[in-house]
Image 1 (cartoon, rainbow, N blue to C red):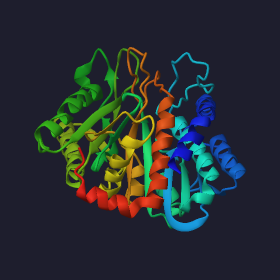
Image 2 (cartoon, rainbow, N blue to C red):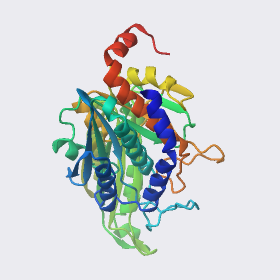
Image 3 (cartoon, rainbow, N blue to C red):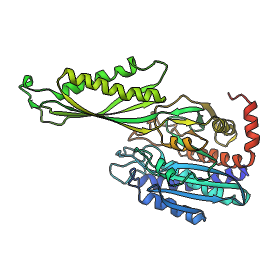
Image 4 (cartoon, one colour):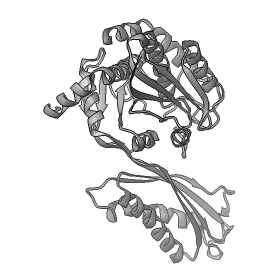
Length: 405
């Protein structure tokens, strides 16, 4: 049945590209998706799948029931875009000003839709059910995953698989990791209240810009001096807001940043240390402050058995040239919530454009992918689904006695 699946996917590769490019031209921001979920639901309805819309807000869940009862596998793809102005000059360039699929979610959606079509053609041979989770709002906390879970998208699911198209890894490469693979992604806001005034009379002010600048430097000491060097942590200040005329000393400044960690104790330490250092810095400058630490997605922790399942399976899938265990990434993903509820794994699929001198990373205005990566992603996800139905017990036994390299 796997060979049939690969053949169907190869025959429908052009449609996969067409869908991806269509979605790329009409991106929608997190929690503002309207037309994209309609498109997704319509595609599944034409296939005859059971379809639920508005799941957790704007999500879509479609169910394919095989000819015989069996396990239930969930496959997830996200479909929101980012507030980025695209700089690529391609025929499928975004037509929405200031909005772009700069993370590959258009590709994820195209992959899952065409895979759903291929699996539908094999439904008479499938022993089990497949749940296609099309998730909104991955890019913006609290994200769509937790709301979709609360709305029942994982009901009856035995295992979940997901992949992320990776624009900086070569086409044909599959990266997997057991355990913590992606970090917790948190946000903080610090408002500093000084005393504004004329730029020619700084002695009569409490310069919020100077205070905030000192704070930015001081915050960097948390990771270097307060966190165990054997633990991972990132603190980045991404926004420094103090808009005034050139000759005005700022009354207030807002700092906004992100914190990335893997361990709960490190996460809590970062939260408390930011407050402590902010308080000390502002006390020394006789300034006031307010502080918010907003917890985002938890770490994405892949299950051992399911990750080894993919690692053993992937080398035999068409298009896969290399499989390897990768280092943890400090990016965050709300796929983490699915893995807190059911066994599963989240892997990366290489899609670097080979003839580009530079591989632009995710969230870059020149982000783009080699669309062959979509076909490989569909092959691996499809193979994982069918193999899980038909040979899961056998593969589990093989994994236990085989040392992965």
